[in-house]
Length: 618
Image (cartoon, rainbow, N blue to C red; front, side, top):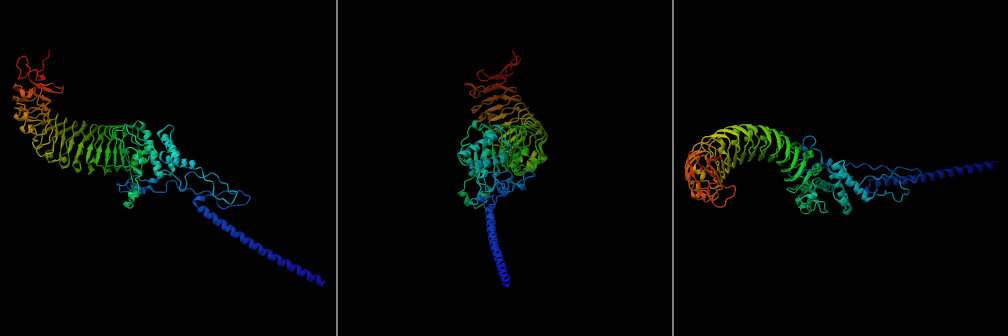
């Protein structure tokens, strides 16, 4: 019995020992399994952090199907904040200059792409069946690239209509990619190639006079009319870098007189580095895209087209030169005080209405303002003299502009052109006008000006003076110091007195119009000494005496002496210039007909005078 009990105890001890050993072995195996799991987890994290192994997590050999972790979405955009790329020459971040809607980060406008990839995420979500290759199969390169291009195009144009210029441009970019890997280019470059292609198709590029290299495999910086510049980020670096890096971003588009037709597409405003756009003398129609206000343009020239609609709503306040004459733009001239960089503003031959906004005079840097032949009304701003840089001021052909010529004009010491012709102005010519020593062109014709013309002898730079069709009185103004004067027109006024001999001796005078006044006395003897005079209109005055010789009038084309009290014979020295074979524009008029009661005042052969007065009615 004791022996049996002893044996049973030994067996029990052995069983306990075996169980402990088994437990120890099990714990060791569990520890080893944990190490394997930790290793797999670490490997999974490394795979997740690797660009080339995105999206699969750890390998699971269990029978359960597992979902691979989703790839984190990359922020749309290019990863660069474009606001740091304000174009060179502007000097300021755009966001600090623009009102709401104009100060956005440029990254919101640039083509969209995904960092580290060239297309959309793969839709496959199943884990691999083997642990040997945790890398997912990449998408097809062609599909990936096409998706990238479409993303870029979508960020520029949004939804594209069939058969549009945008669709044609997209197809061109996709076709170009199949021949040369467009996707290897920077996204900005892909975008601007697409934008320029849209512009080409929108303006009928196949019909341009010159379209060299456009829509070719050549870089767009070599396309006709395109000038590229360095991106501002590169320009801010060491200048030595510029020697080895070619410019890549479109900074200027110049296609003047090139037979462009159609409309200007909104996409052109996505050329964020564009500073100069010159489309002068083409056949463009439609309105300027409102998106233009987002550009930092410094020069815009769209003169001589068929553009219409509002103008100023589409403009950037960074403009230095705006040339928009000879279109059909409409609306009123708004408050321009924000356009502090403006130096040249030409809006002539449009249909602008309303008055000239007083804010114009706050533009102290404005050099040239031309708004002739519109429908403007109101008065010339009294503070015109505050525009201290002004050289040209032309509002002619606006008959609804009334009031006086402001006295403050005498403060415009740099003024060279002052043209207020064919308006509805009244009053006197400011007495201090002779202080404008740089004045070259003084035009105030077809108004209701009155009184005497102040002394003009100080205007030594004067080349042209046109005061015809007013109510001016007194004697003719003294312009003896204007050695460069070529046109003097004071016709159709009420000037009296004689013709100054100094007027006839001006060395460059070509056109002299004094007709329809109350001038009296004899024609100055030196009138025939001029070799430059082409037109001399002295008709419809009260001149008397004989006609002087014209030995030196070799350039004469028109000499009108009729309706005066002249007498004697037409000198042969004058007839010699009209007796040879003449052109139609040659005219010699005189009072060489009898009125049926009195004999002809001036004797003139038929082969000399072209028209005799009075005109006989048969």
